[in-house]
Image (cartoon, rainbow, N blue to C red; front, side):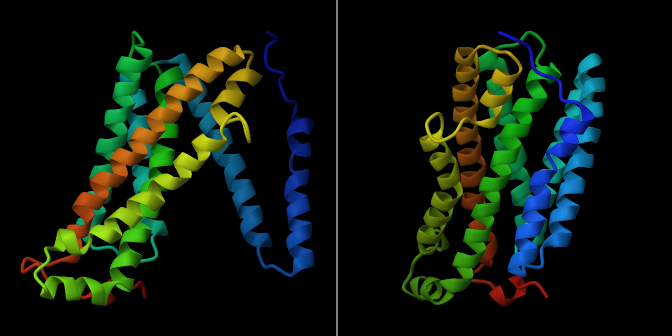
Length: 266
């Protein structure tokens, strides 16, 4: 197959016509989003350019240290984004659980993928390790963000039902079961929906990138199937760990529901 076509600077610049179209639409509709659109476009461009130069250096100088640094950075930013984007004011203990769930779930799935599925000779090979880590962490971040939102909102909206169940002798776990189940379902649903439409409704990013770079479509499909199953496992593991530990933060040592007004951000 032919190699990838290199894009010139003017071709890259011409892609921003789509940003211009969006700016015109929001302007005509009277939607005040121009600033956010421009900032996100510029930030995305600068971040990707910087990431590109960093990856070029790492790929040319493969090292376990560099690979671990990148992994720690990705985990750190993902945890920061989860906590920052949550509407509720999270207790410190719940933040620790978010971090522990993200790290444990994604790292365990990542190393299983590297050592068992693709079985590369150098586990720290950045060509494989970094892209796979990015996809697992990125999707798990989305899943656990949904889980956090659904759990906190569910605890607040169903406060009376939980307290009623506790007064009737239910344990915190059984009183929160419906909320936990709904949160888990909401967190994994985007991944399941993505899998349902994959290959028919759309071609996923990893597969598209490999095909554009000249890889055989069959090889690209093999990798895409493996990574999607890895993503499914990573999302499920991180979310279930968070929910099974996180709900306990909403109850005190006497198994009573805490004051949920403290969760509202000022």
